Amino acid sequence: MTNFLPAGIINETISDINQKAREMKSYLAEDRLDELKISLDALEEMALDLWVFIERFQCEPLIYTGPGKTDEVIKRLEWALAFSEEDIEQILRSMNTKKKA
Image (tube, rainbow, N blue to C red; front, side, top):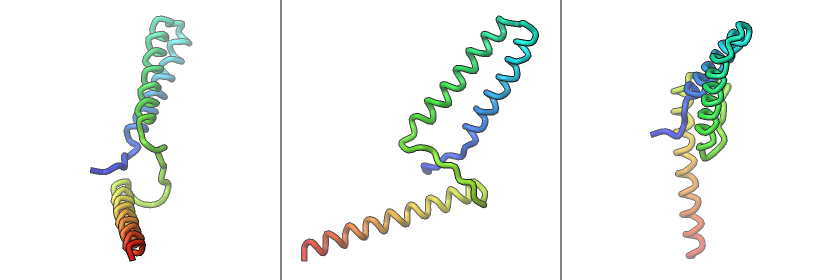
């Protein structure tokens, strides 16, 4: 299991919000206020759902803008984290060994 999440779900929601906003403009131009209210409620719910989704993360999301495909970058990040966690464990063991000596 990975802690890295491709931004696809966020991109899709932003695209949906954009589409809903365009829809609302046409409702406003055509004075279709009932449809406008319904769309406005849906837009508010989409934005809230996205906010709640992101707010549940333990840390602030990062955006990587370098080269590589998403899956490749995730694999490299997982490897780097695993490697750094091993280093930290070794350092802590080394410190404990030195304290005992």
